[in-house]
Length: 169
Image (cartoon, one colour):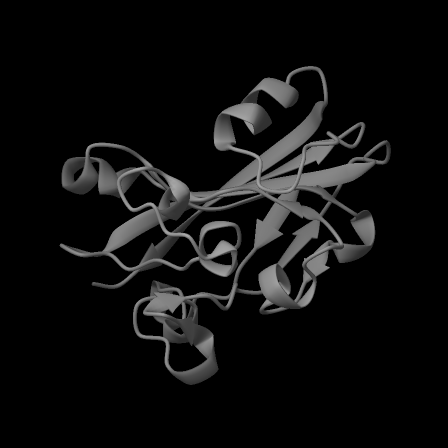
């Protein structure tokens, strides 16, 4: 399985992160998810899942930052368009990102339960984007947590692929 994200000049385009403007922002958060393509999906795949995490956030916040988690993505969405997190909400299940945690405690589900883009505070960060090909849907509830996804994955992952995406400070 392979995933592709357009990263001109080696960086995630500004509209999907810290330098987004207008409708690509909500209350100071970049909310337009980037487009991507998933190819070479195993034949027995029933659904896809994804995680977008920032391990470079550990020295800054003390923990890995979760930007987006989703599950039960239908194969018809293997070519995900920009803004799928908002425009296609309801066609797959989205979990809570780090903005939902008690340190930020954001109360807007359009921010804490959807994609919120990279906003590296101290230096360029590399974001780990991982896709999972699954042999079943996971039936996680809307607003699930990362640990729930991790507990649901064993025994269902047919393939996975990761890609590092850099976003500028």
